[in-house]
Amino acid sequence: MKAHKMSLLVTGSLGVDTLETPSGKRDIALGGSALYFSFAARLFTPVRLVGVVGEDVPHELLDVFKGYPIDTAGLEIRKGSKTFRWHGSYLKDMNEAVTVGVQLNVLAEQGPKIPSQFCDSKFVFLANTHPALQQQMLASLKGVKLSVADTMNYWIANEPAELRKLLGKIDGLVLNDGEVRQLTGERNLVVAARQVLRMGPKFVVVKKGEHGALMATKDLEFVTPAFPADTVVDPTGAGDSFAGGMMGYIASQGEFSVAALRRGIAYGTVVATFTISDFSLDGLKRASRSDVDSRLASFQQAMLY
Picture (cartoon, rainbow, N blue to C red):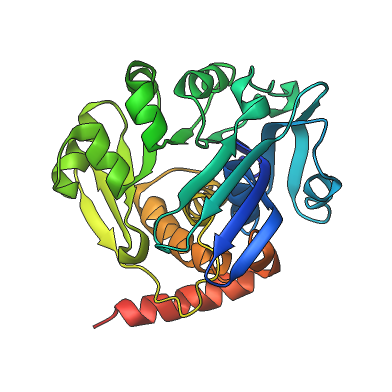
């Protein structure tokens, strides 16, 4: 029985990006981990968004959700605060952003509150933010079926104790290959993934960019190849879109299983290709579920030898 299909909650950053890639520059682009996640996950199931912006938030960021199954009852516009801003450049390497500048602004303050009507959420994604804040968010929810978190090199380096606490409370962790090596000190990704499992999560997904993804549970490890994308305009948000596709699919099934996780990873891989095909949210916003299913079919065909 596919129960609780409407209860995928995401909490994370929302902001304004300045983006530089070989394809050009965007001075005011919508961004943030929770934004990309939401627009990826909405292809599979309705999304509940929890986040905070400042009173200087551009109207484009508030208007972008109209017409999409994303409930913004948990989006706080905080008076006296400024919206998160990030300036990233991919001019040297399309696989890794160079942070030209970052203004945490409202993200350096207390986190947003989860609305009471969201507290029954069964599937929860704690997008990249301070691990203490991720723990607070998780603690205010009851009866969660699946909790998954993302993290980044900054928190691994600067908040190792809080991150280890978080890992003891979540079901799954999503991070990239550089981050899992930093977290564990292991070069071999399979060995590193197994070490993360010993820290608490039931599964770990390691994103390897253009080389696909590795998933590990205590009983199973498998690798999903990358989708051969022929158009890469802006890689920003690819990892968050991957997580959104993965979690959106799992939530649409109503129950967690390793089979759903494997299929979710394949969907996440495909969804991310729409994100990187254009600047900011432009490629992802245009995508429909039928577009994604069509691309998944060709992806699966390519994996058959």
